[in-house]
Image (cartoon, rainbow, N blue to C red):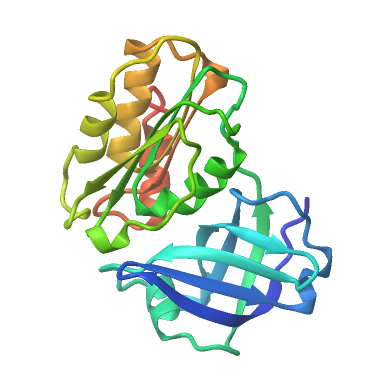
Length: 246
C-alpha cells in the first residue's frame, strides 16, 4: 500500500516503567488506517539536518478504528537522538508525522512449543504475539530489561514460562539474552520461534536456531531492531552486509 505521510497529534503520554514510554497518537487522518497491523510498525518522521527528515520505526501496539488512535510503546533510555528527544519533550496536543503501516511476520501458532525472546525494543511486538498464542500454549518467553522495575505485567498462557533478564547496561556488548535463551531446556515437538532486538543477540540466536536446533524455516522469525554503537542507518547497513546471518 502507498506510504503517505499522515499528521497525528499526541492524545496521551504515559510512563509504563522507568525505561518504557507509551504514546497514543490520534487524528482524522487515521480514518482509512487499516486494522490488523498490531505487531507491525509505523514510522515517525522528525525534522533532521540539511532538510533531511529523520525516520524511526515503532511497533503498533494497538489501533482503534473507532477512536482513530494508534498506541506505540518505546524505550526511553540513554538515547539522545531526535526521536528520543522528541518523545521525552513532547506534550499532549503536539503534532507529528507518521507513515505506514508496515507488516511484521507474526509467530506461527501451528506448533507444539513456543519460544519468544527479545530486549525492551521488542517487548511491544512480543506482547502482541503473546496475545496470539493459543490458550494451551507451552514454552518460554525470555525478556531482557534494564531494571527490575521495567518488568511489565504481561498476561501469558499458563503453560508459558516467563523469564526476565536484567541488564542495566544494554549499550555495552554482552551476551545475556542469547545465553539465557540457549540455556532453556529443549522441549520435544515442533517448535516455533520469534526473536527480535539488538543486532548481535538476534544474529547469534538466528544461527543457533538455524544450525543447532531443529527449527523449520517457516517456524522461525528473527529480526534486529537496533545495533550497539550505530544509528538506525548503520544498523540497516550492517544487516545488508551480513548476508549469511540474515
